[in-house]
Image 1 (cartoon, rainbow, N blue to C red):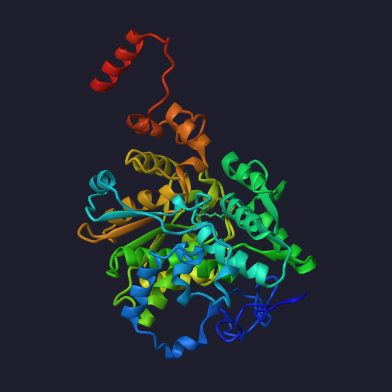
Image 2: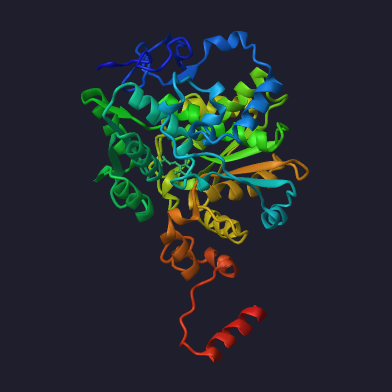
Length: 456
Ligand code: F0G
């Protein structure tokens, strides 16, 4: 297996290292599978020079603000704008960017009333160029794939990673190979990969099977793997937290709540929070909590049954297909950031997910099902008094409403739980349903409908 040079043309060598999260082994290069050469565990990127970090923090914050006024592509990226805390590029034009990041922080007044938490905000990562948070990591990892001289990039995916990878590969002149579980990802996501020109394989297995195969593939073929095992992805995804804190004028919220699937995103946000605290960008840590679908609750079980010591894999099943993952790769990193920030892990049912998704939709924002676990989880954390009503909370909405129209249509038509165990309980969701109404094309029919809607 060929080592991945960080000494590739254009990448500076002294700037960062790969460190094993288990044995601490530190190197300048990583192998193609991004596993520790010593013990086989995951790697993270560290910055030895930060031990003597001498940048003036106030100046750094104003530099990031000033870059928003620049018209250069690297400054217009909400990821590379924070490049002082990312692996360095020799030249700005090496970055493959689609102007990712720069996502809005919305107030959620109706959800605030529902949960009884008035200071409730949503960071909407679904408004990234390909419609999910994956773009923030992909711009960095695809850039380093090209710098390392690779022609092919590849990933296993529940849909969003593949859409994002295919787009960045196309922009960067790379070929891309997508491995997705057949019949288990939404058409919207699959169609993105096709349009962006990926070679797309629907494998007769689940996501975990796709990821296993990918890891074998990168040991045998010259392809660069772009799953979140790749630590460059997580460096890019850190910027979600940087941008969020900037939007809050560097005053940390009490809680940040994210969905958990393969657990790369929670690990990245947690790493960013710890780095920000250590560098003096923030004075205290928000609690970072992870919410899983009850049918894909590997992290929850790992924490409850082994105190986070060994992974309990599950056979994943949920209509929130983005997080239909039973064997999350970054579980150790996630356990670490939950412990370090004092966050919680909860699980939510399919009905709770559907209800929360409709409630976020009714705010005029919307998100995909996997993102809605955050609101459903918040309701539980409030009941348990882990989140106090006077505290401030940010939900990370990871994917766009348009990513999974089948789920949304099935919900509004009342088909989502047909024949499923939760069918009766789902009647409680009726008042959130807005099924399409088919009418004769007459003024009378439309006015009657309007009058009926006014009464309801
Ligand atoms: N939300 C959405 C919309 C996702 O697509 C994913 C993961 C997650 C949450 C969970 O994030 O894996 O970092 O814990 N999607 C991956 C994919 C696995 O292939 O698109 P995570």
